[in-house]
Each structure stands twice: as structure tokens, then as C-alpha cells.
Length: 108
Image (cartoon, rainbow, N blue to C red; front, side, top):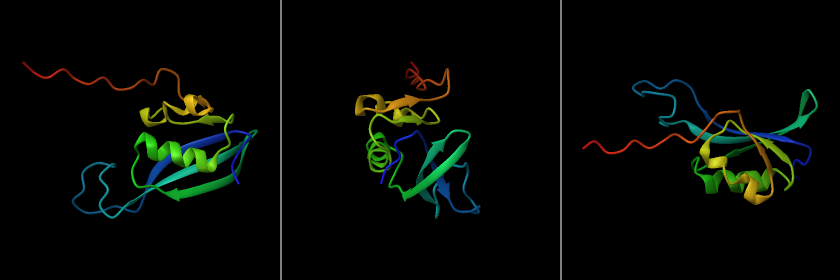
């Protein structure tokens, strides 16, 4: 069953502190999970969790299709991997001003 009212979708690492890892995105023994939370006015509704292989666009798009009905308003954190959601039929909302990071030109 998928959310149809409105949904907030995000990804996170599940697992605790690991010695020797630098930065929050280093995986180690942590598991990457996706979360889809149904928006119900000022509260939350159903929660769907799934273990994800990675945070690439194809993976997050498939998670969104599995958990959320087309036409639903989907709120995300602005990660570029979510940028194709409007093409898939979702009303995608992300924080104002969040843009794809620019790639730096190679040093001459």
C-alpha cells in the first residue's frame, strides 16, 4: 500500500559510532535505509522503511515508486538524486535555494 496524501522521503544510515571512520557518510558496518513518512496535516501517518543498496537516483526513484502513489506531494531534503521525481509524476518539494553542487574545473 502506498502513501497518497503527501509524503516526506529521506535516506539515513542505521548503525552506531565506528572507530576509525571519518565523516557521517562512510559506511563501515552501517546500513543505508530509506524512509517514507505519510504527511497528515501537522502530524505523521504511516512509516515505511526499506534497506537501500545506495543513494543513486535509480534506487531512490524505485523506493519512491514502491512507497508513494503518483501525483502525491513528496518532500525531500533536496538531494540531487530526487530531481527526476516530477518526471515520474510526483509533486516534488525541497528546501528553497538548494541546488546541485557545481563540479570544480580541473586545475590547470
